[in-house]
Every structure is written in structure tokens, then in C-alpha cells.
Image (cartoon, rainbow, N blue to C red; front, side):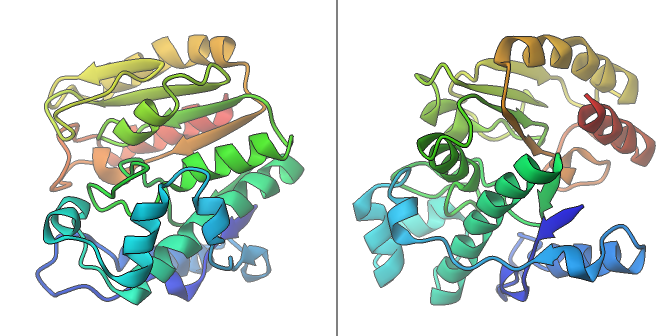
Length: 260
């Protein structure tokens, strides 16, 4: 399998910052060490073009990012301290998802070792998400006629509010979110299908919900390409999660989702 990754995915943050930026190089090292990814199959992205980002994000927001002119409120909402490196990193991650989507069309499956920034709205960042990689990839691939229909399967513990809102009026893009009901975001725009779970549902109930709904989602979406957001924050002990899947439950989630 080919995967998008480069060292630019990591940007230092203040020591007390809650976002685990070190997970990106750590994941890359572990995949290589365990033989799950070969070095020659790692494809380093370039930063996404501003013109491509404009297909989803507003010119005012992109200008503020480029010039370091975000308001204090906007930066607080984004949840990450602005820097030129952060903007560069965010553009890299967007292009990584675009590249992974194109590789998946060729190979059947591919990955981006970052991305999934489903809280980035057209005019602002939110929840540690600066730019919306999946939305940009879907727009570019549909515009270029690589695909007509897309499905976003979002199994992060948080509902994918920005994707839900952005694609609400796009019948050809189906958004499916399985998430914790009592967690951020507290205002959840409707996805094509939302399945909200109570705190600590247990592995069996979580997997039953996934296996109950995913087959019907696939039938309804009829996608040319599926974007899978396999958030690890559903795992037990995650400080931002409320689902608390065991390792075995998490493995079964991914095994089932990726085998459909």
C-alpha cells in the first residue's frame, strides 16, 4: 500500500498544548519498523496550491492564514497557535489526502498519515483543524471527473461537523458519522446519516452499530471512492473521547470498515 507522509507533518507546539503532534512521525516510524509500510511506498506531498484550497475555503480566511492575520478569537477557535510552519504543514496534509485519493483510484486503497481535519469550515478553523483536506480532495476529484460520487465514513469520536455542513446540499457526496453523542461539537449539523452513541457503549454495542448501518450506507451512497476517517480517539483512555473501545474492538472496527 502507498501512503502520503513527510517530515513536514510535524510542527512543534508549546509543551503544555493538548494536541499530540508527535503522533505523526511516531506512526510513520512504527509502520516502517513493523513492516506494514515500505519506505519506497511513502509518497511525500508538496503543499496544496492556494487555488485548490479556494475551492472549499474563503479567500478572506486563506489570506488571514497566509499573512498571520487571524484574530485572537479565530486562533482560539482553531485550537492551534498560528505559525508559518503550521500553515505549511496544513497545506501538506491537504495535498497528502488528494494524493492518497488518486493513489487509491489506481491501487484500490491508499492512506494519508495525517489529515481527517473534519472541523475546518470554509471560513474558519476549529477543533485543531486548519484546512479541510477531505472536502478539498472531493471537490478536486469531482471537478476533474476522476469521480462523480463520494462517501465519507467518519468513525472519529467527534461528529464531522464541517463535512456535514459543507456537503449538506451535495447529493453526490454521502457523509456518515458514528460518534459520541455527548462530546464536541455540541452543535452538530446533520450528516447524510448520523449515529450518535452514549458514553462507554462497550465494544459489542459500538461494533453492532457500525455493522448495522454501514452496509446500508454503502448501498445508498454508491460511491466511486470512499474516504475513511479512522479516528483513534475512540480508544480507551483517550482524553478527548467517550467511547473507550478496547484494542481488540478498535482492530475489529478497522478490519470491518476496510473489508466492505
